[in-house]
Image (cartoon, rainbow, N blue to C red; front, side):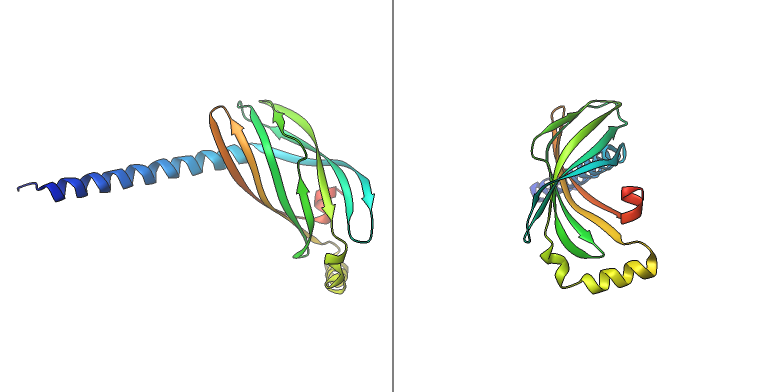
Length: 167
């Protein structure tokens, strides 16, 4: 079998694609494992601004890092949905570090948009009365640095209002 220049280049390209695919797979698995080693607990809230257009809260959240790796949370952005209705955003006003095998109390900002509920409030109340609870979802990302690795980890967390606030 005679190897031509095209066959060699083709083989190298295929090998490169396979190695790149494997590296991407390993990276995604490492990020998934990292995210699984964190837990979150709501511990308090305070109203900072109150108007018809916006209610701004400070939320205290305990973030537990169960891994042996320190993580710098550069940015956090989450859209909040109550019974599938967008109601506001959660953001981190500053960067913070979660040390290995420890818990960090982060103060986050939650901007609640009351007008977002206006169009769907009847459905939310009806669903809540039937289910005795309301679905709560957080969708967004956290920009994390750990050592020399920088990554935007997607966050898609679903719970219920009662479960999240331990009512």
